Length: 396
Image (cartoon, rainbow, N blue to C red):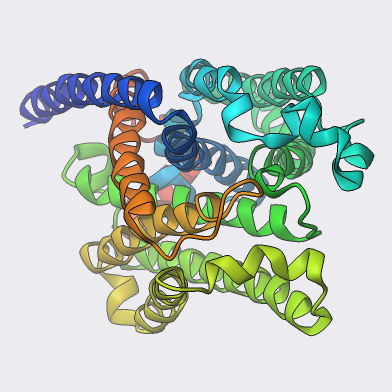
């Protein structure tokens, strides 16, 4: 059975890589024809897969600090996802090369005639942007390297210092994750509309990353549930723990997103409402409604019932819904009404943007999934020397 599963995984890995390369080639050709829209669509897809990788790293650090059965089930899945960060560093190149098409603050003429951009030019300029990208990835890659290295060493040694090292790294690591994601979100997403102000947007963005990463881990756990190391450990209590954790993240994301909207609605300041107005006009308002329903209302309702949380298949259905909606939410956040573009009521132009975003999603996702599946084979699905694994197996 194991060899059959490995063979199926190898076939999926090769297929994902082939489809991903083809779709990325299509994106490159499209960018030659319509560089601005295709690069925005690429930014949507890139942010989605980067969010899963970074959110997975955050989940690993939370597990090392808190423990629990749930971490035994998805810990190695999340570690494998975090090891895709070198690929995502390479895939950031189109954004860096196409900055002039994405961010209008890169134009000296635009900045010279705009007092807001002139004020922000000390921070929003090409050299500083590039240096910050290097700093972000250096921190993320170092965190992922040591988290995975020490986790691998725990499989080979009973050294009691290794769990202590992982805990000591995870605390400051979560702080660094929060800080770097705050600045990265401002640089890569908020600066698309550089006149807009929000102090909580980066928090909403970061919680969305954890939500998508946790949903991805639940889905992968369902697909790998028949594997011998996991089959013994999956039980009702472990599934319920994952369901409760997913419900917690859904509620936290909703709280932060609603807090941002409520404060901006109450303040009703032109520089703040400029971000929401185009996203609540025409067809965009129906996308906003779908995000509210599918990223909060429906998952919240489903996860209130024990029947959903006690069954991994039912739980994976909620995870699929959340994964799809997280992508739609990113499309809604990034694509409509940049500072230099007129408001479009989801006409032909944004229909092409949606198609380009899907092609980019499959392109970036294909190569990312191929690397993820390859990384998944490099370490056991469950930590070999974890006392928690023996305890969880007893419950099974």
